[in-house]
Every structure is written in C-alpha cells, then in structure tokens.
Length: 268
Figure: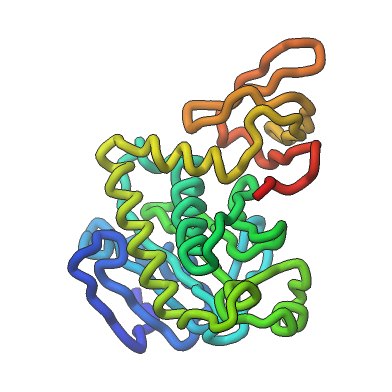
C-alpha cells in the first residue's frame, strides 16, 4: 500500500502515544489514513502509537459521517493509531479517555473546566470546542478535532456559529503545534494508567465532566428514547430509574444519546 508521505516526522521518545508524529500540510482525512495504516500493523508493529497531524483536511469527518471543517492551520486535526488487546477496544473507554484528555488540555489553556457532552464532544460555555471520532478495524484509531485559533468570524464562515475555540477565550491563542503536543502528553499519561488497570481517575473525570448523575435525563438506548433519573454511570454500566420506580441497567455502548432535562447542556 502506498500512503501519502508526511511533510515532517517528529520523534518524542518520552511517549508511547505520539512517540512518532507524522505532520502533513494537507490530507484528505487523518482518520482514513490511520485506518489504512492499521491494516498493516502485523507487519509494522512500530506504528502502534503513531500520531498523524494535518494543517488542513479536505474530507475531515466527525460522528455519523458529519463533515469537520477547520480553516488551515487553526485547529488540531489529529488521529492516533493503536494496536490494542480486545479488553481495551471498548468504545466507551476509548471515547471517554479521549474526552477527558482533551478537556484537561482545554482547561490548562483557558483556566477553567470544560464540560463533556455524550457521547463525544467537549464544550465550553455550552459551545462545542472539540469532537472525537473513534474507529476500529484491524487497528484502533482515536481521532480529534480541537478548535484553537479560529475567531468567531472564522467559525461562522465555516458554518459553525454555535462552536467556539481557545482563541475565543484568550487574548493571545496558543500555537496549534503546542496544543497538539500538550494533548499527546495528556493522552499518553492517561493511557498508561488505563493499561495498568488504574483508570479509575479517568473514569471519574469522565463522569464529572458529563455532570449527569443524580439528574433527570433523556437517553436513547438501542434507538429507543427513555426518560428517567440517572442513578449511576461508569464504564461497567449505567442505571436509569423510571417514573414507576423501576431501575433499568444499560452498558454505555448501548446509549447513543444522553442529556439532562433540567437545563440542557452539562453545567460548568
């Protein structure tokens, strides 16, 4: 398989995730290329942890094949390829790990917590600042689009008037490359904990970021809308208590939507 050649290759020996970073000025989709490379992990095991960064994507994708738009050089457009054991390939763990990593970087730069929106968005003041796309074939691909230096006008021109960026909350936005490095460092630290079976802090940060436990919620479970009171939430499952007092348990992967009914977006 011939693949696009990176414009720059950077090595970071202190990391597993992002030990090697391929940077492209332009790429159709970092996730698409990572999936293609993942098909060759058996012969190229060194690609485990490979990060792909693009200044511009011509066919960037979000959840449900939605288009992810970002002006060239103004956001982190990145995918990381992993070769995981079956126990670590659960979408709920992967998506929440990514969301917590992104939220921690956003908080580092703007100085206050970001919120999480089920299943794969990071919000500031109710506006989307980042989206996550986890895809799996032979390899596992963790994709993220994080808005960094877009102005409010840039976001409107991209058809995203309800979105936000780091620049919208700072007098001087950080360099995109710096934000990408901080994100890879955060991902690497958290993933080490999860691999050791010590992911409780990541799970708790995910639960806190969603801020839905103890609130009335609307869930879509296996395509069916469900209204109730969210009693608990974790990687091992969640429970929604119905109006009649019955408590229904579900696995996170069964829930495509989950939102509070007492104020809409997660409170932060």
